[in-house]
Structure formats: structure tokens, C-alpha cells
Amino acid sequence: QVQLVESGGGLVQAGASLRLSCAASGLTFSMYTMGWFRQAPGKERAFVAGISRLGISKYYADSVKGRFTISRDNAKNTVYLQMNSLKPEDTAIYYCAARPSTSDLRSLTDVGWWGQGTQVTVSS
Image 1 (cartoon, rainbow, N blue to C red):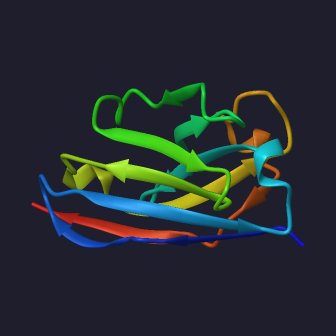
Image 2: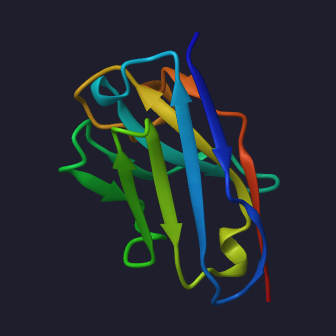
């Protein structure tokens, strides 16, 4: 079955960087649009970034544009989220998501599979 396993979360100070990884198995990775969502305490899960099957198209939520970069390595079945200039408001559980389609991955209803999430905490 499809499994998405995130790693790389942690506790950092404002201004620091983190790189999240999501290792996928049980699927033909290059056939899936991939993305990241996050859920802060008391808030709904929200889109962060998405990437097309070959990594050509990338798109971001306005709140992270210019600070976060999504990438993928189809040879390693892995998608990454490089997070720079982290802010306390970036504190959330970050979830990897997969969509078996060429279409963008921007909303919760687009997601076919979820990872279990990794906690990112940014202190001020």
C-alpha cells in the first residue's frame, strides 16, 4: 500500500532553516503530484507547496513564498521542503501529500494519500 513517511521536523529559533523529507513507497512516484500541507494548533490543515510529477511546476501559499522551496528526487522517491527564515507562525505539523494526477495539489480534496506528519516548532 501507499506509504508516505515524513522526517526532518524539530524545534528551531526564528530565522533558522529546516529541510523536511517525505519518502514514498508503494506507488510509482513519478506519476504523482506531490505537496506539503500544515496544521497549526486550533487551525484547519492548509496548503503549503506543490510540485508537478517531473518537478517542472512548483507553487506555494502566499505565506511561504520566497522562504520555502519544494523539490523532488524521483530516483529516490522523495519530496523535500526546504524552509528558510522560519517564523513562529510557521509552527505546525507538516504533512506530505500525494495525488495520482497531473493536476495541481492545492486543496484537501485533491489529496489521495497523507503522511503521518512531522512537527515543526519555531520559537521567537
